[in-house]
Length: 415
Ligand code: PMP
Image 1 (cartoon, protein in one colour):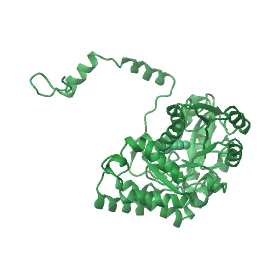
Image 2 (cartoon, rainbow, N blue to C red; image 1 turned 135 degrees about the horizontal axis):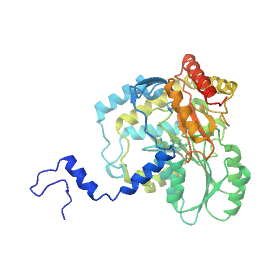
Image 3 (tube, helix red, strand yellow; image 1 turned 135 degrees about the vertical axis):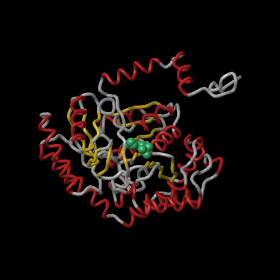
Image 4 (cartoon, rainbow, N blue to C red; image 1 turned 90 degrees about the horizontal axis):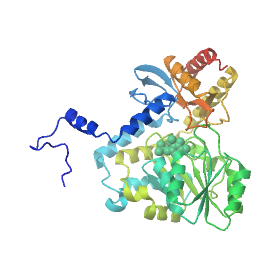
């Protein structure tokens, strides 16, 4: 059978235009035109903005200089000189790639060094790094429970947890957001089976923190394991950014902690921290570990340098929180609804979908980049502009953004 349909009969390649024409004649994907049009009609079609230069508190998107309130680069580490230096050195010494899946091609010393460092940092027995926070969540949830078991999940958990639940084939019970009566009911209904309760530590669209002590207490009562996704708490909450378990002083009481290396840590990746037997099992069974190549040396070396920075420079986290309090209280004083936010994720809740998108567009025209977010990412009627403050913002940056919010907010009748 001939696979190479880019070749003409005489063996010469078709030009791309002629090839596209061939594809168009048998357009079996025409249904996507309808789907795309439907997204456009609903105002939900997104074109990612293009950044020129580094991801910073002030930068240039789509040719416009803006105050950036859209990034998860909470501590400004994405371009930290020590991390860049570590990445360059690792690349020069070890190359740009890691070769293959680690259970096949093996792992580098560097990968083991990062995992040891993270385990010590989190005060747990062991740690396993995944390619992303997404694969850490989906790969873990999907592999530790199966058909006979029950996963009990907060309704606002991240998509990667939802996908992991579905892939596990376990029964899924979703409880109302942070509602402990709902959690108790789900636990009662799951009596007699293996159970996992899973929650985000910090919720990514609202910026509220899970009531982890209550979750742990209930889970213990019913013999369920607990997993927390600390994507937005890693490097943000707890001493030196150790996460929600440290924030609530629950060391030893949460079975599975997931963190990201892509947000406050400034690079890329996710990790699972917990008992040695959990990590041993994930290495045997988690599909992203078994079937996808591990990080290149540059990523791993930059993450190692980042953990040193978290330990040596807690003042970065103090600055993040000072900026957070200043920006949130100023938005509230202006009359905006910032919902239940208690972290650097600060939503400005608008309600109407089109108005939220208009607020984001007009803010951008005023030199402020904050993302408009609508259904299905948040419930219908709860559309918002989500702002994220970082340690890198100066008071001038934040005041500039506040002035723009005040101007556009008044124009749109929001305040
Ligand atoms: N969990 C939560 C709560 C998140 O917000 C995200 C990122 N949007 C992830 C997991 C996935 O992390 P990563 O970007 O490292 O894949």
